[in-house]
Image (cartoon, rainbow, N blue to C red; front, top):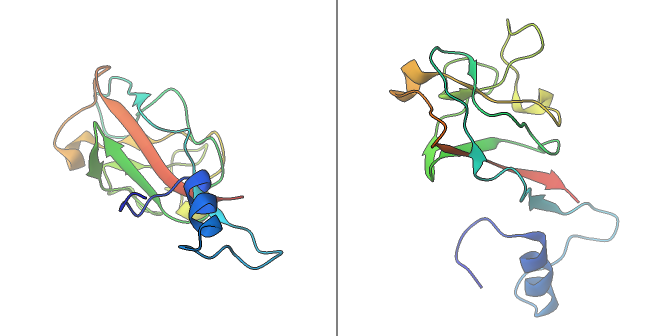
Length: 132
């Protein structure tokens, strides 16, 4: 078993089956890390607020969203536009909180916060838990 804090649903079920991790009580949803939004090709960004990737969230997060660029974790805004990676509603005037995120929401990039702009050779991973 890996020592990483991020487990796949299969790893959790296997660990529970051998007794090293309890399953949630009957009727309670089990959270698992969404495996789909990894290594997304980045879009070229030139200004703060530019769309960071062509695809967005695959599922609705149950909590915080972590972002990585080429494997390096970057800050994510939660209702504020001051992170490297931020989320906006359709009007792009107010930043979304993690609780407001929906499938299809695309991340936006603040190069002035990150210290660099994205290029097509960059890969963006969005890491978050979803309910089973």
